[in-house]
Length: 467
Image (cartoon, rainbow, N blue to C red; front, side, top):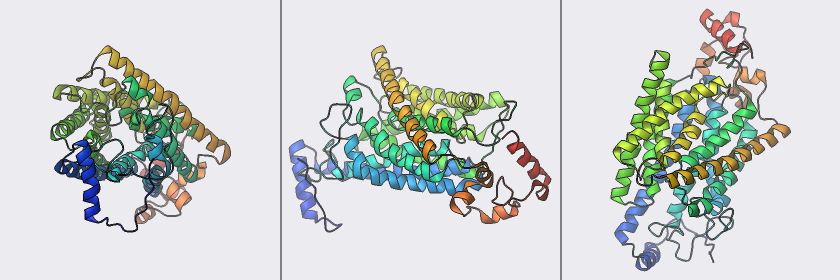
């Protein structure tokens, strides 16, 4: 039986820590040196995953319009905060319930270690607290993926409710099926660091939200043409992608769940190779199609390669990692075009990157690497369909209930005005907004297009026709 222990001081006496830890080392033959190394690496990995949230916020802000920047930064700040709290209250024990029927289990509210405090229930190589910290950093990522896809037109309060429920219950129950020792784990389904468990789960949630929200005003014209809505800050988007690439060292490298030098270093190399290959493949695929090198596609190619390798980063050789990343880079280019063609408006390409390439990465485990084989490929397909069958309807139901009760989309006037002003009453770039004449497209005023510079007035007309 687990014990609930309260600590009156942040600093636990060293002698107690050493005594408890030595029990774990003696019983499970983990040396004090390895125990320490594991903890240091896992805490560093947790910090790297945490910094990914800054990367997500930067990418989403950079690839959307300036008038929505405060709203986007607020959502990303809320998501990581509520994700950590709900994961501590219910999520950790839903995802890792111990002995359960393989489908659903709950080990109780709050955080409480076993009798030896210092030992994780699932890995004796590091502490219970390190275990929680690392897993908590993953939890909010799924809702962050949804944030990018529904950006620029979703109401703030309903999105906050969705994020809370999705992270606390949908992500954690789905995660228990594999990482918690559930039925998919027993079947042999393999997802090393979360191509499906994190990225596709978030991608299914994003798809559900976008379908119920509809496209942004002016994105698709009456005659069916796609109107590109450029991002406001490609420099910020680029910074965000490199922050995410850095964070993936912790995302994949930490998923080794130890400081094993051989496996960690292999995982980091395959991760980097796939990201690089994804970037190059996306560059040349988009260049061949449009005649111009597209920075946004290059950035999404990096993310596509990272998502694609995540399921099997510890299983791949150099050539396989490069091929997986390259295929992901091409896939993301065609996926972005496909979703635009069917009028599914995703401002940052989150569905293409996380859902499409998450599915690809999960399948790749059965095609490449040390686990490749028809039987494994079939098991990977079962896992993909299982998560689709659970996560998409669950997200759709949450969004549908919110839509029917409080509504999930801002008014046309609020969308044109910008969510910074309508939802928050403040702007991320007040000086810039004022210098842009405060038009409905980028500012918060109701100035007519006639008061704006000619080029700007033209872009305003194009963006709003057919809306």
